Length: 153
Image (cartoon, rainbow, N blue to C red):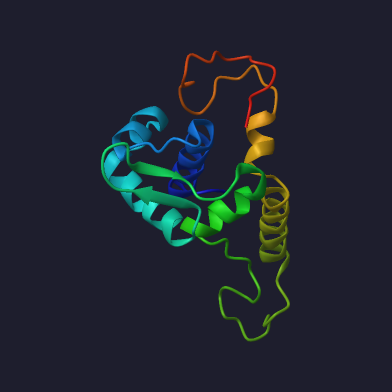
């Protein structure tokens, strides 16, 4: 349901939130999140335009979050790089359907609505604080180990 671009953006903000307030270079982010560096630059550019990430030049520079994790929803990240497109009218432009979606497109839009609602109600801080025994989407920085009961934000 989500594109690779969205996945990469989510990985990047999770990593940057964990590293806050320190800025990280593109190569550091790419290595930790397993995102190709060239593609990551494009993703970070979208996040910068949306005001989610800020960049600093010079020694010690790089990218960092511009929004506190508790104020940043996953939907904001998604919409920064690839805005969610709900189905408002027949995508086949069938005159008989107009704004009355057929059962297929109505169900697709319902799924999009559920996704939108879940991601709008989830902050980055909540995601980082969630206890888990799963291996994260990127390596734990600073010697953290999988299975930690809580993560500081």
